[in-house]
Image 1: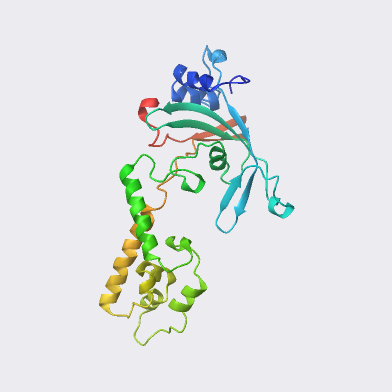
Image 2: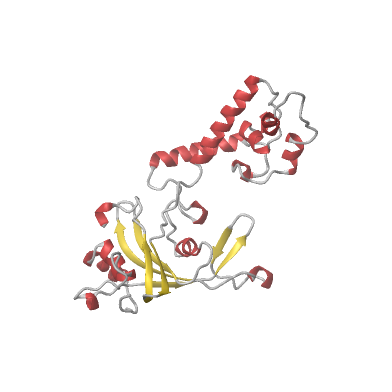
Length: 282
C-alpha cells in the first residue's frame, strides 16, 4: 500500500521513520492490526511508504545440507542451473539504530523461494543478525556470548584434532568410514551389557564427544560411563555455544483471501513483535 515513488533515496526512507512510528508504518504498509480493512486516516493519501523491490534468482546449492545461494548464475552450466528460480522481495525501513548500526526492516516476499529473505539481504550486503549461515554474526550484540563462542569453537577443534573433516565439530555431521571402522566394526554386545550401554559404546557421536583419542576409551566400567556422560554434556554445551540462538527474522503477518457465507474477505493473523524489537521504537 502507499504510492509508488520512483528514484527514492535513503533520505526518503529515513524521513519515513521520522514522520511515523514503527507501528504506523507497519499499519500503512500491510493493513491495520485491528481490522480487516486497510489502515485508513484522513491523511492516508499523504502517507507514502517507500519500498525497495529487489529481484535476484535463488537456487538450492546443497540439498543434503539445505544450503541455498542467490546471485548471478550466468556462468553456471545447464546442469548447475537446474532448480534456479526467479525471486523478488520488497523491503521498507522501519527504524535505524546508530549505536548497533542495525536497521529494522519490514519485508514482503513476492515469491516463496527457500531462504529467500535471508539470501536477498545477504546479497545486498546487510545480513540478518545471528544468521551465520548467510553472513551474519553469531551472538550479535553480545560480547560475552561471542567470546564464549570463540572459546568453544577452539575447544571443539582441539577435541577433534586428527580428523581431516572440519565439519566433525558439528555433532550431526555424517559418520566417516574411518569412524565407523574404529567405533563400530568388530564390536559385539557382551554378556550382561545393557542395550543402552552397547549403543553408547558403538555410537560415533558419543565417540566424538570423548575426542579422537578417546574413541576406544569406553570399557564398560562405571567410571568410564561417568566420564562419558560428562564428556557428552561438555560437548553438548560447546555445540550450543557455537550455534545460532535464533536469527533476527520474524514472521509478522499472514494474509489470505477467504470466501464464505459472509462473502469474500481478507483474513489476517498478526503476531507480536519479537523481543529484539526495542519498545522504544514502537
